[in-house]
Amino acid sequence: MPPKTKPAEAALPADDVSMNDEPVGDSPSLNDDPHNPARMAFGEQRIRILPGSSDTAASFEFKGEDHTLGNALRYIIMKNPKVEFCGYSIPHPSEDLMNIRIQTWEGTAVEALEKGLDDLSDLCDVVEEKFIEARDEYGTPMEA
Amino acid sequence: MEYDPMIMDTEATGPSVKITEAGSHHVDFELQGVDLAFANSLRRVILAEVPTMAIDLVEFSANTSVLADEFIAHRLGLVPLNSKNVDDVAYSRDCDLCNDRCENCSVTLSLHARCTGDDIMRVYARDLVVDGGRANQWVGSPVITDPEGLGTVICKLRKGQELNVKCIAKKGIAKEHAKWAPTSAVGFEYDPHNKLRHTELWFEEDASKEWPKSKYADWEEPPQEGEPFDYDAVAERFYFEVESVGNLEPDAIIQQGIKLASVIQTVTEGEGGDTNGMNGADDYNNGPRSPDTGMVGSGWQGDAGYTTPGYGGGNTSTWGAGAATPYGATPYGQSHSNGWS
Image (cartoon, rainbow over all chains, first blue to last red; front, side, top):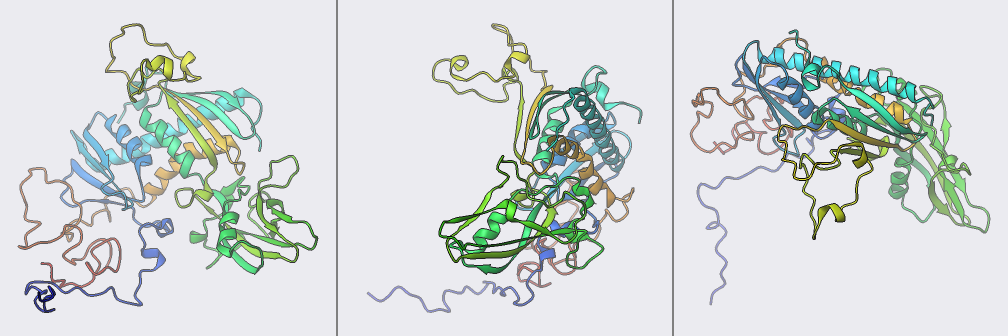
């Protein structure tokens, strides 16, 4: 029996695609790594509207956010009576992205998002105030 | 927009907080009148997004101990450092006073130990000495809570062995590395009787006998015998047990945590009020997009042949020139004609 190896050319179908190696020396720097939180420096644009959106129905992509903001924001936006639908998703666990979809009855989706963020901020302020109140009431100062 | 979101949650009471127990290193409290999503966000922020100080860079001048440099560097990173008023410290990466690091954004600690006696010597966290200036008087000192005042053991040295290191502590959050965690544990509990059936209590014969009662079980009405399932019920009372590592006071952790607001702020800062700049839409052919409302293909996938969504094309994207993937220089997005289309 002859050896079962084929000639090297035969293994390459005509429509096969040759891929280039990753260029050497042009390696991505620290700041190109999407998983590096340091990349978020200098107030870069972290929200964008995904293409295909209209005024009343839009998807927003948040860089560097996760369920922490996503779920709470989704909830608070849904509380807005002008909003028809709001949902969020994290499309892939290894990409540091979170998407929020907003559809409104009236007003624009951007307004609903802004209102959601403001409302959530206000809610945080209220809870903080209540916590400080409760702490002062509890008396014994918590000191490390 | 004149509605109050809180009125819809609970009849005009709004959120409330009750502290049930507190000490120098822990707080137990009950949060009421918020929804599960918010309470969980608070838990997540406390756990991973409250900034603290930790050693981030270690320069070894001498290490003749039995442990490898990187091993000791890792141990040093995990030593809790006092982070009181850590707001005074800037994140090293966006400190505008320096290019590399400075007293505004880092704390330098040095450790020099040499064993000269016959006994095995232990190097403790208390042997870390703060060098030079720092943003305030607390930040960066090792946390020492044991009665002897020693702190954690960093390594052991035998006669003649020496350890001489310079450590740079920086501000960070636990989302980046767990060494920046302010808490050792955050207990989070609701619905002790499992009335909402958010969990299934597996049992051999009788769930109520086999599962221990939560300490909060007495605080809430147990379900009546044969009570029908209330499918409108939502979680309302959340029991937190926050355990500090010692670098921040527990109430400071929670206050910082509730500044989920700060998360929101960092997000909104870039937003600039209108859609200006939020729209990378028109020249963006690949990658994620909103579903078309009419669900009619508007021809965004116009080219024949196979194009990997999000990877192919090589079109200009909001990710920057050339590369169509968020990963920068990969073989997929690098060349404008990449053989796939």
